[in-house]
Image 1 (cartoon, rainbow, N blue to C red):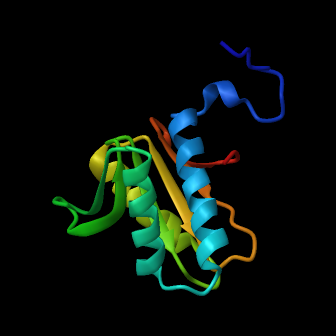
Image 2 (cartoon, one colour):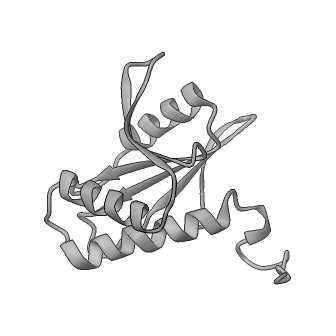
Length: 138
């Protein structure tokens, strides 16, 4: 097993679901590279769904959260909420949306990705006992 440097700038040892997150990020980068910045959100979702199937990663698409009436873009392995955006900039509203999803479902990790960005930067949003914070590492 690879030893992790706990003194590094980003403490990878504390990441939630690092391997699964890495796989998902790879799929997101493929979508951005192949479809570009100006496709529709639905097209990105279809691409991600196809790649999840190919990678044999268990997922549910457009899952309704009963207590809130909201719909999650992807629930991956009942561990990670994935929200896809195609907007000029993401705002606090987008983060609050994932915060509500994490609180309602009890899931620990959410990924927010905006495909309109020139350089793709998926954001990790984690749920803690004290509240929800944005993680610095992707």
